Length: 214
Image (cartoon, rainbow, N blue to C red; front, side):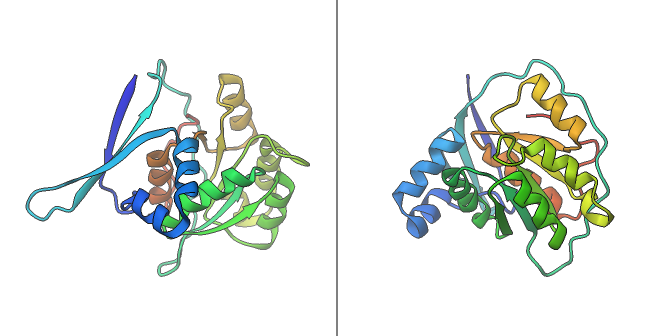
């Protein structure tokens, strides 16, 4: 089935195609569209000076069952006047490029790790507001990295961690949940869901009762 999503939230893409193409070229936009599974984007003005609604089209399956709910971790402390700090663990260079383009539009600070071991090392030396964790990586996979982070002392252990992966079968989701992940975002990247997560974290909280879902 085909679906159309509309969102007017503040960090949702602002003429994404125009910005990405101007700043990064057509090749990056093509990679972004392919990775996200987006077939079209556009904008529609809101009457009476209400701004614009930006929309996208993508192919998706209808959900059949409500996901299990897991308890959200402690709320991260996000200081006013600074960008959100995100750690993204991703071993694929093309996927890192796509994710960087998306996160640039949200005006966040992103640090990349190329495997789970690098992600754990980064968490030991720097504070982050959100971790996006790929599942399959060399040296240390995503679930193992999540376990290692949850075992850390102090505030690092409470950092929200969301898996960013194409492996979203029920057994996969159970494994992520048991490792300590707070949720999972599907690859190809679902742009609106990613930006909604960023906006929630930027508000100084993690979603209450966040479902470990795709």
